[in-house]
Image 1 (tube, rainbow, N blue to C red):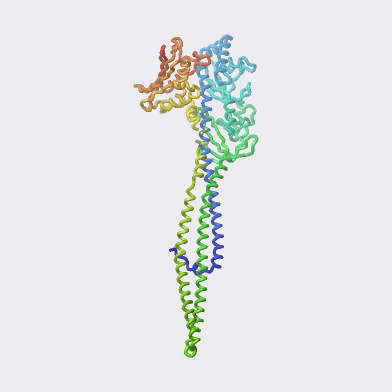
Image 2 (image 1 turned 60 degrees about the horizontal axis):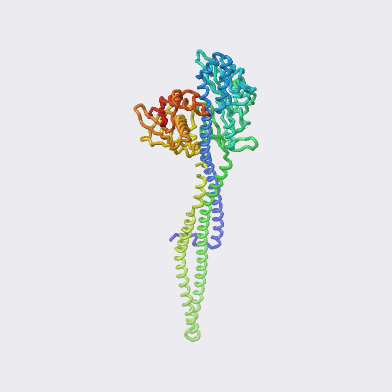
Length: 619
């Protein structure tokens, strides 16, 4: 049985009442402090958790945007490479006669219409454009002098260059990709392709979250907010500013810093910033920065945090209140029961003391009366009778006093176990009520599902378009095949059932880049499926086997085969049997495989065509 303090047993109800007021005031202060600490702690935890979740989602989205930007950059890069080796380009720059120039003009015009490039042109060693894809337009590049442009001088010097600038004639910004024609000792000129990012910026704008790409000087080149173009991530130093002005890269743009202030770094690439976007007040954003492969650029992605963080803090604080308030209520109930028990015991103790006092007084009165009666008993019979009555009353009073003591003792011995049993029962009921956590679990489950969706859409697309030209490394061939099939599914739909991938006997790893090997397989799968269009019982078999040199991947279709005349020049640029094709897919595929020490072989007949890709096996 729990022991009570002597002060609790000797205190009067009035003293216990005053003590209870002080206890409740202290309990209220402690409860307020615990509630405030729980709200503050849960708010900080929710903010930190939500920021981590937003950072993870933003990393996925930023990687996707970087991958898409790399994919957009990859296609135009092949054109200067191929055209720098084209005989018609060499003839036009060498002879400079009208016939050769006209032929080249028309060729550049046809090429640019089938690509995402804005314009293609060829300039001589003097920097004057000799032929251009826009030769028919009033603002044609033909005859313009571009010798002062960095992409021209750098290409003449090193063989290739990439340079983002504002167009002299069109006044549209874009990336100029150039390549020297001829050798370094005997150059003939430069091939230049300009690509613009209008479609990419429109896609970014539809996402409603600011995105921008800056160069090595911090100048914003590509952005979802047009007014931010040619602003800077930081104030430019004098020499850098003078060099940019002299190159006419940004025209007369003011090169003012972006409206981004108070950065708070969370990690090397993630920070909290305050941003003022056009048409809105200053707001807090999560900024995630990523390098763009194969370029000196960086992509910054801004995600608003105020609304999701506020929602997460609100939910977490409600959850904290849902836990703290019932606990405080339980503590208050237990405290109330303890004080009620103390008050009841004090009241009983006071009543017992009063009863004992009255019994003692009555006993004293009866004793005095008995003494008087005993002295007069001899001569007073009537007094004797009265004395007997008084004695009987005394006996009864004494019995009542003893009974009162016994009753108080019994109440004292029974009350504490009963109170303890009742407290345990109430505790058990409260804990059982607290185990009904299904609504809380459902709420926590809904938050976990927005993060896990703008991830895996593009896991294959992200992996497919993450990098352009990269160094060779170990790549699992099975994953490359599966990713290529997934990327083709949206285009060929039900016809993809004709593509049968035989399981490889072992998870081979080959030397290469996953992104570029996917590009090779997509070209081969796409060509095979297009060759089978309209054929009955169409089938494309993909198989992998180990060879003495490495790994051989075969793509075999049961189509009509390739004509012998075309088979001999299959890997020649611009050689194609498709009305809308450019004849570059197999050329690029062969170059990619050759970069990794492999080769492509083809065998074709009336019963079908088989392309075999030989790759080096990773150690």
